[in-house]
Amino acid sequence: MISAKEIKSIVLNLGADKCGISGIDRFYSAPEGFRPTDIYSNCKSVVVFLKKMPSEVIMAENPVPYSHTADLLYSALDQIGLNLCSKLEEFNIQVVPVVTDVPYIHWDAENQHAMGIISMRHAAFNAGLGILGRNTLLINREYGNMVYIGAVLLDTEIEPDPVVDDFCCLPGCRLCLDACPVKALNGITVIQKRCRGFSFIQHPRGWEIYTCNACRKVCPYRNGISRKSAGVFTENNID
Image (cartoon, rainbow, N blue to C red; front, side, top):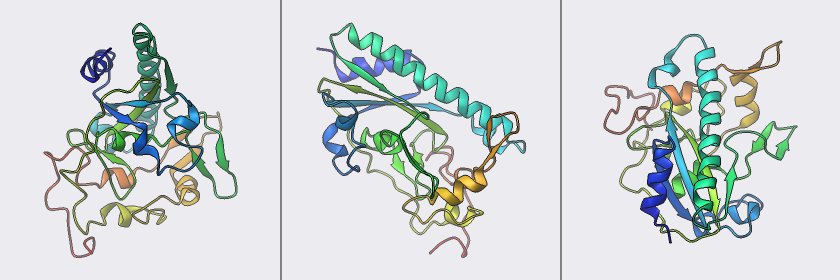
């Protein structure tokens, strides 16, 4: 039987920057229809992996570099997932890749609310890869919130990683909440109708461009815990 350590080594050799593993019991609180076993009834473990976005891309004044880099990362993560499936099948493990971005099924047109087939952020949290910030983004200890997430579902029980509990969002921090131009964040979830209406533009030639990443940019943990920004707090952004 292949070990968790061996699986992680394969994932990293395929190009991921981080990898963690979760059992399906950690997904029981997910909405019905969006649990790993709803996607693949034989699922017993979820392998989750991260790729880091170059830190300075988010600081570019023109939105195209950020949008294009995000698209490339989604494609790279999908390819890692597909290649991992091939590798694990050599060990007689059956694997189903999870799409990193689109397509998805759930779409509430009135509220412009979408849900992926599983929540990748929560999958990464469950696999011990970080915490969830008040802007709902995953924060990894080393890479901060500049990470994109991929996952595959396994029909085999693999030793899970412990959930991260040795750091948390800075107490009382409201930087991401206050930075949102359309007040789409409440510290628990995102009001997608507000966010989508402001953060994306549909170019006349057909492609989407991300035009806002304020909540990601202002986070003191954007580049990781060890590189936490200093001197960013004022009376106005601390409860």
